[in-house]
Image (tube, rainbow over all chains, first blue to last red):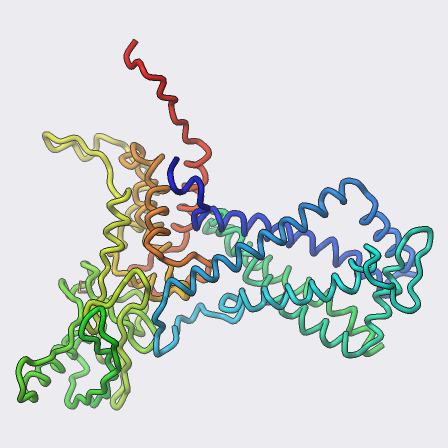
Length: 227
Length: 262
Ligand code: FES
């Protein structure tokens, strides 16, 4: 057996990063789609939101995907940390004048930092929702269990009623947006999908995607802050 | 031109280095960057009373942008401020009178400093030894047109082969990754029929060697492409990623069942 067979090579790690990342990218679209129904965009938005939550928490296929999602997230996070540590180790003595290449943008340079922001956000998110769902934490005021179903709508409302939470939410989601901006095109490149015609298109779609997702999520606390 | 130079000085691989400041007057703007350093060394020789004279070591050979020896990290950029230029092809007219120029060696774990601005790039040779070669028949010179090659592939292979192995990609990368170098070397063979014989092993052997030597990972930042004096494209990295995957899933090792011809 060759050494590369037992230890993941740098390229194999990148494939897993990219696959898990693309899965998380598509998951975010579904999540955002449901979240937007917290806002009064239709007359029965509250009902649609509850239905969607019900579907997401009971459908057997989604249950399977939930395992894939958690697994994918953990894999992505662990590999991300390993890759970053190796990268720091690869240059034990740094430069006096920092690297000036014009391609360095905050998006690419701070992937590990924005990644940690997302991780922190997820911990808060889990404590607020998943812990309640699992019965590890008490549902907040105004949110009751109806027919065994948790009232995620009122749980969210409860959180967004605090301006502090709204601002924290906006800041953390911005971190996610920065992460996504680099991540989108990066995933395609890691999988070897680079083409003179299509890569510029992928980059544009990545920018549009990250801006839309960021502002989509942020629109909810903004609504509760100002409307 | 009047210049202030801040140059990294280090006696040997073990020594602790430091920056020294030097003043230069009367540098012509037509002077090349390496000639400017030659003048500085000359000045050090003339000024120094004590022997032996400790001149500044830096790598160079062809001075015409083809060998890949020159390797200076100037004001935060490998090979200096000009795009698509090796430092030996850089001229002082790209600097201003009174400028302060900071010159550092390539910084990467697998590229230890030998002396001053000179680093050991043997790591690249080891990667090449691991798989950057093709099998050829000995004997008479083969006919150049014996193997037909698609024009586009020949062009792309030539673009990849333009890599001079200077290591600017590693120096420019925030992760000190050698991906662009390895990708260029994998690509130049992957694109041509001559490279097919070792294709199944090549990319895996070279990537394994690169990892083993301690180069960083690629985070698709593309500083390598921006700083490469030969404008090697990151498309090559994507090609290497594809090669790596397809060779891994298509490699059929014939089970060795003993016997032989039978
Ligand atoms: S000295 Fe040969 S490329 Fe610069």
